[in-house]
Image (cartoon, rainbow, N blue to C red; front, side, top):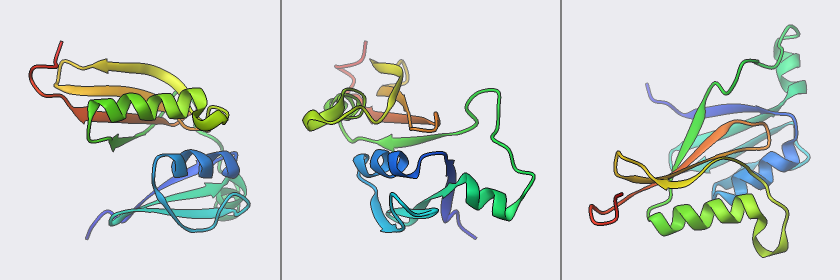
Length: 138
């Protein structure tokens, strides 16, 4: 047995597709107008479903409340890439609108990583990180 996919419910498929495409995931099925979309990241898939899909499976389904219930973490490889990705997604690269919300601006974490936390269009937390070399830690 292996973990094959993570599924996220989205209220705005178009915004979610733009967000996860901006993080470099490969769109393999669906898209901005689809009720179900799949991205690939190596051997792991990220699935996006609309509220309508969830209600077709479980008519009693409702949105969770009380804060975020999960987060995804993306290894950006370098501290500079953490900062660049954060800026691209929160400020809007190449004249585009922001696609992410700011939860925590980039910082050098005590555990030895450059770290930032953003939110996707449905307020799910997304961590951006990279290992720091020991000379760069604060």
